Image 1 (cartoon, helix red, strand yellow):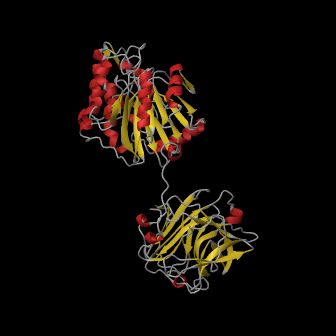
Image 2: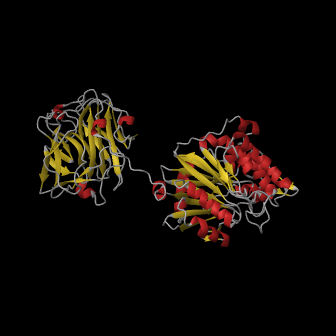
Length: 613
């Protein structure tokens, strides 16, 4: 959880910039931005098509609706705000990749039949589209002195298990009907919403534990009416729920509740030592009983974050007609409790109950795609021992490598590797600039690679990882893969004639750079990547299609790829180096990093054929 106000604002601004089309109604933008914008009608929402979230996208949204009780209070029943929120979700379900909606209880003020019937009718909008959602009883929906063994109520008759049977997200319910669980697919895996009654009985706790035991690898969002009472504090019942259920079930990573106001958050360490994020969201104290505001939890597994926004679709729908004074105040609902980001390393957080299996090594033969001219990998050796003798070219083309030591340096085998690397091993280079020390590899004299010019295109791939002690003063501009021989020796004297003919190097800012002299020009052509952090494995690919060169980092094209024509790689018949960089024909720098599999192919490969795929 963020604690700095400035940090909140910076994260929220970054997250919100790409989402303004969805947030025109919220406190984030202001009344001017909402003018002239209206909600979709029921007919327009219906025309939006069936609800079909993308189960594989690593970005998805969970919507949350807290206490709506003041909208359904005896003679004062107004379902328009709830319907506005639901229609808005239907309209934006596709672009938001909406996977589920959770109501947090206190649907009504008195739990009376006519109140329940009215909100039940509103939720029919979701039923008709097959949208997955959950509800649960709050203290105003049932007799507050009872637990989930209370028996039949108007709430249960309308929102009991019979309502959800047949929905593809419905997992099941407790025998009493007041507790349910729901399963949805997102980011290529199963997730659960565990919707619990206002008060769990002993049977309720036993049922919930059994559900979790039956889905041991499923991450869980627990919803209930009462848990967090204010920032960093749980209610007495919330503490009981924590002690008896949440604390010992590592699957529960997020809890959502209403009941109290204003909105607040807490974070607790569970028995496994992992953070559980506990969120209170409730706006019934605000204008028009909260106007059925919805909170959007936008999961982004690639960024490792949940971006949280609070939206008022009903106010959006009224903006075209002009807002009254109190509605304008709601437009300013933009505090840290309503708009924030939660950083979660999902893979690490879920590793205790659902570890991602390590990708197995792949045989060298599978890496020999058509056109492979050299393939070196470094597995099958005792980690920490020194490299000696020849490192074979597994392509069978005879581009073997020999060891060169400088200043008494050494080169060691390592078992460390990129998680998507074919070979489970690497070389540990320990280069140092001044005095120059280390060891590197070079192709043997007469190796076919030495004279290859790749006029029809090429792909050069390598995996690398920079250690924590990497220092630009001593380690910058070392070559990962390079071709020896200078521009001057090749008769190409534009730019610096002492630079090597080709080098895939790392700058002082840890940016990968491909700098080389094409066959069709005198000067040096360069492609630049972005800064690559330390202690992280990276995959690089330089791809030339016979006319243009593109540098990829982790399969993603970088921005600084020149459009100038570049054909082939100039050669004077001298060796290639792994981990070494020559200047003016002499070794000038040695890599300080771990280097994984390296492959050179005499044609342009698509991203789907890279070694990390």
